[in-house]
Image 1 (tube, rainbow, N blue to C red):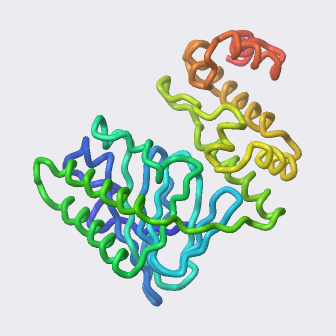
Image 2: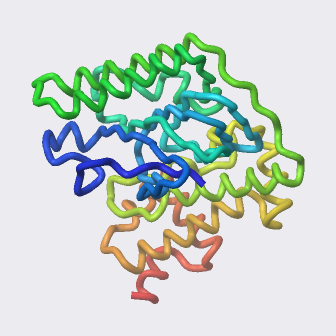
Length: 297
């Protein structure tokens, strides 16, 4: 649904220069007009924050709400809140930048800004003058990427923060709830997407962060009871059952296909204590993790 243009004059998604810092930041134009074709694909890299300038008639979908903008808008998103947007009209233009939390390092705690926190509104309608101001900020980002200035990363961080502060001075756009049946499907779909984003576990340093239904409800900006009702209505299973099934699936994979010890697997799957993981696994598999591994390896 979300369509984003590929960067120009690059072999991959990031420039080859300044690898350490620039591997954590990039900026792209969005430009598609009637009769033209742009090599586009959804932007779905994990772990990236994103700020987008969307010009034209745009519809945003998140949790059990949708929101339509008839002019330009500034959109903020973080790695843990699934959403999608689409251009309703034919003409598409604007910009977006992506960056990691590590790009800010010790300078700022980017996740603490309201525009990146779960439960807060993240889409801001822009006037013509505001659109021009925001466009100039993105253009300055593009220009800065072409320089070899020693403090280029600092300039780019400041430009991101300029967008954040500009948004914090604005009133967010109002949203409307989906019809009840569509809302349940939407909430369940986004819950499932958020659950799946945490997998596969590919290293010992990677950990499942969202383990309980309340955490998913917070990230989706819905009440826990609404989440539970929606998931039960659509899947026939409880939210907890859905989470447990996915955790068990990953536990079996890690036990069979890695040489990690059981304590490491337990930690990666979000368990604070090893006995809790052993009891959880035995309840669902009728075998301890150790016996399961010896039986299947």
